[in-house]
Image (cartoon, rainbow, N blue to C red):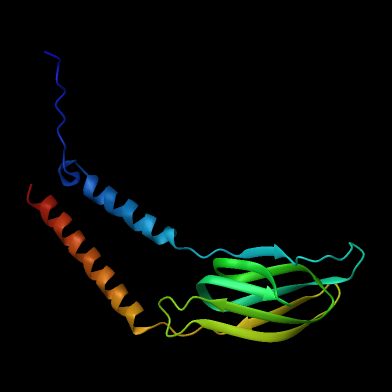
Amino acid sequence: MPNLVRLEITSVTSLPGAPMKFTILLILAISFAGCAQDVLTRYPSGGTAADATGTLVVKLTSPLRDVCVTVDGKLVAKDEFTEFVKIESVPVGRHRVEVAASGEMREEALAHSSFVMIEADQEEAVLISTPPLSTGYYIMQAAWGAALVTYLAIVTHERDHR
């Protein structure tokens, strides 16, 4: 008869010091999982290197998900989680800038359209106010906070009663 290996599964809370280490790792993972990133891109131009260009910066007042930016109908950023998009090598002149973003956890989705004048070797910024957070966002935050407090209370209770 073959030798059988017996596995014992130990709960996380039975390991010395594990609950607090696990809690700290969990909090760190949640904190860094959803961080917005700055986007640096180039205008998809068919021009030559000698053509005069400038830089366009799109700045949102707070990070949004699924941000898409077009300049004169050309897609320069797609489905980004960001509050800052820098577009280099934009030809000099007047350009239509359109920005759309998800309304996730917001009162509404973002839809912005404006014109901007790009000057040679200059940086032009477009500041866009984002929609306010929805009531659902605050309810979700309260639920996560209650779940975390409950978890910490259970871990502390188990530790104190060993």
